[in-house]
Length: 460
Image: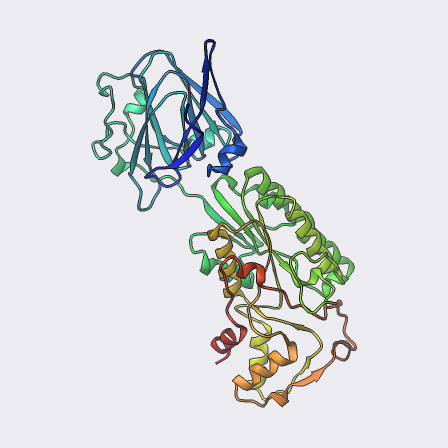
């Protein structure tokens, strides 16, 4: 009896599973699907929701080649088959073929977009498969097919196809050169209209990017309209970020509707479709009383905005496949603090800038790079701080750096306290210390660029 094992094939993601079969004078028993053991050996935890069985009376029944918009775990309950799989996804492996002879002692995990076919080698063969989406007429319209006997595939069927039992539909499938490639899953970016969303589109050019007008966390109908079966990961860069307005009655309601209720809906969608969820958070979940914040520091928000972000983070953490990316002092394309200081420097203005709030800037290009790293590297799920590197500075220090880069004196920036700056203004409380420890994300192999480097490229 073979040990349980999972092995790769020449088709990326197509896995062969050897199953222990326990037999005695009564027959045999096997664990056909065992989530804990199989995922530990490398099989994806693909979340099956439906099981189908195809019973075949005669030897030579041949079915396929079909690629459906879901993953499959195929096995044989009784009998024996010759199985053939063809990669119908776009890319380097398109058209690649893998064949395996199977009985009850073997199973195959078939990723979405890989065509599945088999031929029975014994009478009374029962072919079973688990899938991670429910069949529907809409789903059927998205199937991709290729002809069983296409010479370009070179499949050596044990029973020649002219002697086999085929359906008329399977006989009519196109050859590989004329078949349409299977639709790939793509990363979905929410909040595409914002500064980080813009940077994420550049970092993830194949992603589907939706603006607030297209997908509003506060409007559930816009989320339900998304074709989630075509998504392989969610990056949520959408949020209510009007820190001061959040302290008003109307702003408070809007902040909670987007940052908490809307995020809760997104978590449930991610859970339902078993999608990794990247959620962008903020230093405002802390009160800023310690010089540097670690990922495991308890929440202690000062204002409404911080309270809603903390509540959203807690909801996201209830889903196993999550990355909470906590950042601070974001600078991206368009209006931002650095660009404003550069403009004031060029105009000869001498601004008053707060000098008793401390942190590090987070340039959106580098934030996007860190998010891509987490998704691509398979880093352990959880919360990660992500800002640019370099020394901790005050806002006034940063303004002085910009002035110096623009040829002005650092002394042209007047340093004031938060209390002085806020006199006569309606302002939400700010954390005094916003610096975030970067040790955890650096341990995954990602080292954010230094603030000084990014400042020079942006200002000079």
